[in-house]
Amino acid sequence: MASKLVPCKACGKEIAKGVKKCPNCGKDQRNWFMRHKFLSFIGIVIILSVLGTLGGGGDDDKASTSSDTSSKSTKSEEKVYKVNETVTVDDKAEVVVTKVEEKNNVGGEFLEKEVSEGGVYVAVQLTVKNISDEPLGMFSTPTFKLVDEKGTEYDSDIEGSANYSVETGIDNSKIASDLNPGIKVTDVHVYEISKEAYAKGKWYITVSGDQKVQIK
Image (cartoon, rainbow, N blue to C red; front, side, top):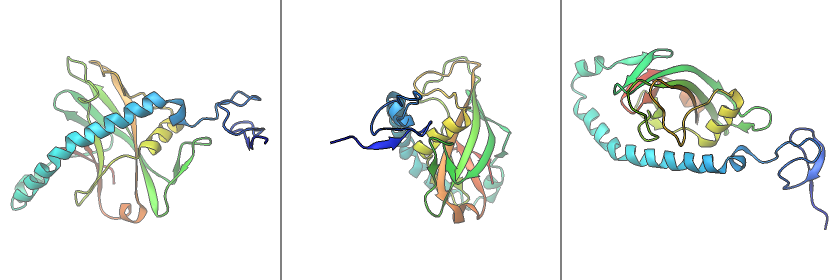
């Protein structure tokens, strides 16, 4: 039985379904994750590890917030940064959120991923610089979440972030290696949330859980 034919992602010529490269133009037919299996695996391990680490402190943070609700002066002293302002994290790293945009799809022509119905992608570009005297390992670099004004936290979309990274071509963040002293890298994060919810109120990116950058 003859193999099914599908169009090449680049040249459009019909090729056998499941081939890795187009025999006509040489274009790799696999998606980003299949071409970078090791990086995909490392990225998932890192995210799960970070979520596990932060999960233990989530209840403590909420309890602390509840105990301080009667102190308006404490809340008023909380520093909220703006886009393009430098956030210093534990005298180890400097973070600058450089760009935020709303998108209906990410990935460009060949890796396009459409947002779910009723949703919107919030794509964030930022830089991270090691200002310490020691290398920062994968578990020492700053972490980022999207947060609404009620304090609800949203994790980034793994596939969407990878596609946006390919689309922009600016992501040179460290995944499985250290960020050495004096080095600055770019990073991207994409969050998929309700379009209706994002249209309301203020929104922030939290840096390592305790510093806020207002993005909307």
